[in-house]
Amino acid sequence: MGRDRGYELTIQRSTVEQVDDERRRGGVVTEQFVSRETPEWTPIAEEAERAARVLHPDRHGMPRPVHRRVLTVANQKGGVGKTTSTVNLAAALAMHSVRVLVIDLDPQGNASTALGVEHRLGTPSVYEALLGEIDLADAAVASSASPNLLCVPATIDLAGAEIELVSMVAREGRLKQALSPESLDALDVDYVFIDCPPSLGLLTVNALVAADEVLIPIQCEYYALEGLGQLLSNIDLVRSHLNTDLHVSTILLTMYDGRTKLADQVTSEVRSHFGPTALRTVIPRSVKVSEAPGYSQTVLAYDPGSRGAMSYVDAAREIADRGASGRIRIDGR
Ligand code: ATP
Ligand code: MG
Image (cartoon, rainbow, N blue to C red; front, side, top):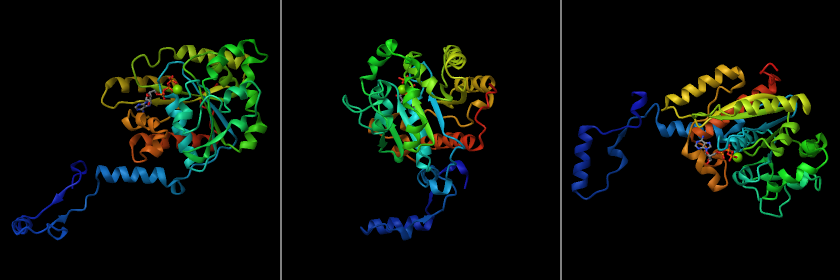
């Protein structure tokens, strides 16, 4: 059977007649009249296979990194997929036995919502950890997505932090202080993802100082590369003055729509500019990905058979493989 003809039931002519007779007699049409041609490939079979790969990680495990990795997910452009990528990459790694911590550094608290973590006013959060009032471990809670996935939530208090931090001592290094090796050892995590707000303010600077790596999600859209120069020069500034280890290790193309030429143009422009820093896996535009946070879920939990879930698992595997091989600095800086 042709691969794209999909699912097909074949009823022999003689069988059709038998079915008609049976119907006329008022009987029930049973399986015995229907001969099924076993299909080699169907959309349902493909979806089931994707779900199996997402939900049975033991058969497709991911390696732990040679050392702990702290990645800041940043792009000052709004709505490019920072939060979506943070929570789904983190969940994909966690479901494959890697211990992950997500720091929600956006007062919108979207990452906390998607990970099913409480972030009402009064909840111990990243705000108190930034102020040094509590230890990071006191704010970290297990996500409903996986017991291997911890999240430090953001409450609306964080909205004031951008201004409050201005007058503080070592204002750019507050998050780095909270993310001390002792705290991270206590939480026993292999990966830390920091989800930034859509700005280049003090919260994002704190994230850039606290991390070794930057993961930049780029939306496959017009204007996608606009503003990227400013982000890259801010990263250069932080590297020269505050964090010599910082480098852009990962570019992730998001919301790829294969029906448009534009998506391909953006993809090839990004690949020619960033080379192998850009992951081979591209995240497709998918309704399932956008619906999942509405149910306080990652797309891996919401629809494990979807292309969106599979793409995030593939992207996470690329990240994990790089981490395990120690080939993280591929931007040559
Ligand atoms: P902000 O700058 O406001 O923090 P962001 O960069 O974190 O935004 P997201 O919140 O992850 O971006 O995504 C923006 C919107 O796009 C959300 O509604 C999200 O559900 C949707 N979205 C993200 N990725 C996809 C995708 N692959 N397919 C369809 N919709 C997506
Ligand atoms: Mg966000």
